[in-house]
Length: 451
Image (cartoon, rainbow, N blue to C red; front, side, top):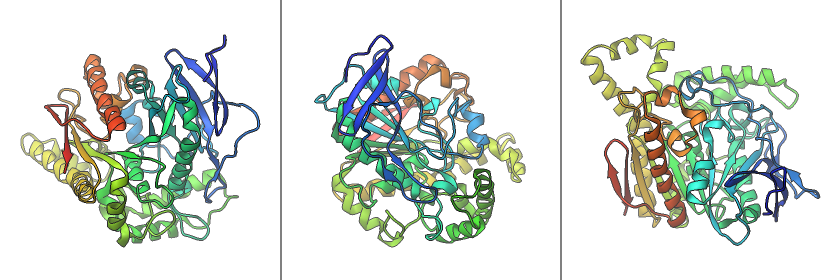
């Protein structure tokens, strides 16, 4: 990595090519790097090394997606000024200024959430700079295909698990290139939140993934609804109808709405209609999952956990649904509070909590280093305290993106910053060592080792 020139441009030489990045004070950012290309509904093909320096100063475009009112409501402006393009197989690297080959810094590869149908790696709410500055690590943010374009396949006209295959290609690019940014390809931690956490868990057992990452942080993954989805996926594929490379993008996105509606009769599984399909590349058959996760345990250190009130994020959204009468009951004095606590606790346990327990125990029994966490932070008195996604403003503490967001409305910004530094330290220490220091901080975080 060269020193910045007068225009703030930094030249980074890697085995995967030469990239022209930009200096941002104490960090360097190389953004919008293409790691693969793909035809619609087909697997990705790795991007070859360019024969010229590649300018990496534009943010990665987001995968085309339908609006997500819930995220817009609680995260304020999750997409910012990002462009949208099907040609979205890009990643962005943020490294400490002056880092270079031989520094062997820990590498954190982030997979965003959004129910496999929304989000983008370079969303402003995922600002990696605080983590990189404080912890002297390298962070990689991956953008991948979503929804009908990435996570639903019939095996003939549309391949399944394309988003997962995209993520594998991104990890292969990291192995080839990250040394040029000062990162250690032998110390890669995959960090995923929500659907990204679900993807991280499944990448552990994906064909071809062995050795691409060495640790995994699985945050708030809805693993409780990841199995038993074959009938729903079949119904969704039928509802999709005939789509191909010539179908207008607007028609594909309209079909995606129809496909989501077709999943409604499958109950709680429909809370995340798009997702991984077992038995299709690169995943094993569903009946082989437990054995595969046990077999990989000695090779991947694991930190897995959830927030204390995951489904509290979704309660206000009930007002826009036919279940609005339930919301009225939940607001009733005394009875409403008790029912709310019961609904949040039971649903959170079913979708998130029980999977944390079973996954961590299986991993430890298989010989893997294992730790769990439970995050309970939130603004005082907020309905979103301890809710799904409340970990994001702590890990990616950018005031311009988060101040005023309903998710943390009422929180003192100094507390956001303080707790953010603490949480980032836990994640970075795990990336360095593969374990956590057990702690129990009321109103914030509990971590423990599983033996």
